[in-house]
Image (cartoon, rainbow, N blue to C red; front, top):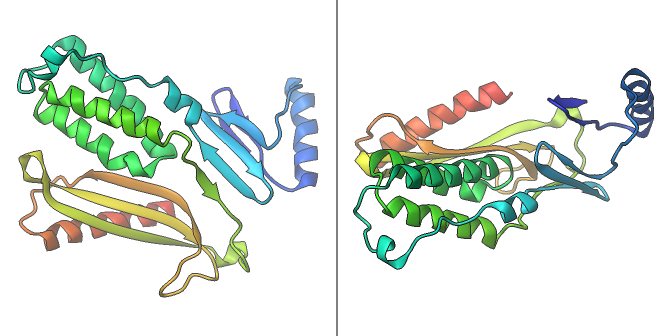
Length: 231
């Protein structure tokens, strides 16, 4: 049973679902229950067969590009107005919500935009924000898919983490860390992995790294910290 403000979601065996439904109806007089196809905290969740699909297609459709005239677009190095900054921050917030929930492919784009706004603050940020919106909408139907892990019990589940880094690719010679975490089962091997994505991150490394090795080392240590927390 998962609850967030006025949103609730229940998962379990058929017997458990019957019991919890009766208890909820009795305690709070809840009448309407949606099964296998519903919205939860802005995410559209659908169960088909043994697989669960999660997407934000409808949310992506509501995100719009920032109006930009040709004349203003040509003023790339000019500072943004307060209204333009607010519009870019709105796009960054919308992009971050999608990137952290269902679209790991947008994680770097969002991080890059946020860094550009704080470090640069020019009209170039508006162009970057609109580019993010285009990417968001181009693959708006992209979904997270959770599949059963064959020959796997709860005791077999493990957390597998991957990390990488790009050296000095951001303003101020900052480096970028990328991390992916997946729940894997008994068929996890040295060369192939069967698992479900559960968490991911793309963020600036706070220290200024002097080499690719230093950036990748700091990314790896942070990944270990995250893995311990998730475990």
